[in-house]
Image (cartoon, rainbow, N blue to C red; front, side):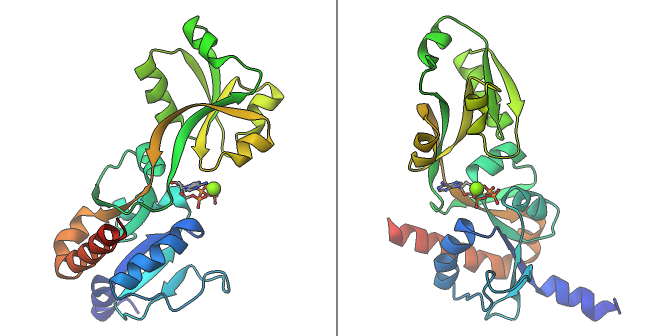
Length: 226
Ligand code: ATP
Ligand code: MG
């Protein structure tokens, strides 16, 4: 059943990739500003493709770290991804027209509260750092001229200093309460994080007449928030 009309239907559709949770929730008001309303609740169904009030616009739900990949390869025309995720991905093939200023937090170095980070840095010791964000961490410590052994983790990092796996972690911090609950100390916030709109470069050319007004409406909504 993949005749020409199916292909055309795909070309007529605008696909937006979002991750469930804070990015989905915080993108909804921006979509509303562009006249787009998601008509299905992701928490009440297992659907991964959600319809909107616009027959030509749909939302696909993907893992936060997969958003740049979907958009880069045209699985989605546009998406919303954290700066952390974009820096780790590299941003190849992505047009990044807009900081949406949502899902704000910071990237920080944290240690056990009894670890003397500053003197370890001063003395030029090798520091063992566990993180999910190895690219961001590698760059940060290289810029500081600090020698580190990076340990890649996929799950919660807070456990690493507590078990002796690492001296420090590089992780996202918003309120700091998770660190505190695990007796960790934020010793070096170094990067402000927020989420960006990312657009597939080919889609921007082919679907410009519909993508441009969406991007402009998002930009106006972000600016109106101050
Ligand atoms: P998962 O939690 O499913 O493993 P994830 O951590 O990648 O995946 P989210 O927790 O939804 O997904 O985070 C999505 C984005 O939101 C992150 O890439 C980051 O930019 C931002 N973010 C993460 N944690 C916070 C936070 N505590 N406060 C504000 N923004 C955050
Ligand atoms: Mg998370």
